[in-house]
Image 1 (tube, one colour):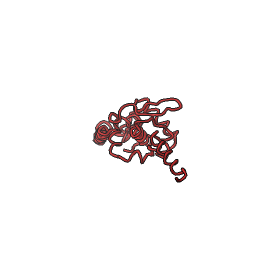
Image 2 (image 1 turned 45 degrees about the vertical axis):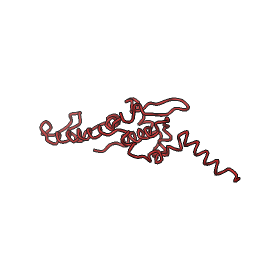
Image 3 (image 1 turned 120 degrees about the vertical axis):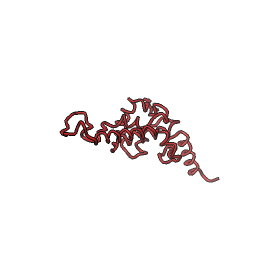
Image 4 (image 1 turned 90 degrees about the vertical axis):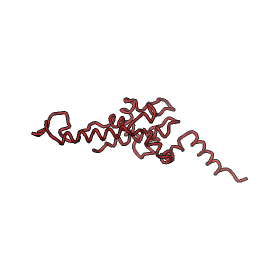
Amino acid sequence: MRLTKQTNYAVRMLMYCAANKENLSRIPEIARSYGVSELFLFKILQPLNKAGLVETVRGRNGGVRLGRAADKITLFDVVRVTEDSFAMAECFEDDGDVDCPLIDSCGLNSALRKALNAFFDVLSQYTIDDLVKTRPQINFLLGLNEFSPKGIAATAAAAAALTAPAA
């Protein structure tokens, strides 16, 4: 089973918002942190917003924030919203266009269903908060300190100190 790039970056976007919970997150900042296009993130944002995993705030000072607490968003919630298909084999597909004499009595289908359910069970045990709180340096790694009002003030103060004439 391989998750799509969309799911990967949906989780990353949610992690960013969770790490930046004191502020609204902006798509250009998230895109810059992960080195991906803003357009790609905007496409991912739509299903996340529709599912209530994020909220968007419009306007000049708008942005994105989590739609509910980070400890209430599981990885399964994200995967369910962002993945189109969980068909691990032809016989999982619903179109009925399978040419196999074992279709109704195949052990492979049963084994794959158990494996998929185990995968979903594990994803349900982890939240966005679990991913963020285990990385105390996440704000630094994502460059969040420079985007926060405190980080901007600190950066401005440091720049002023460097350019101030010596006493």
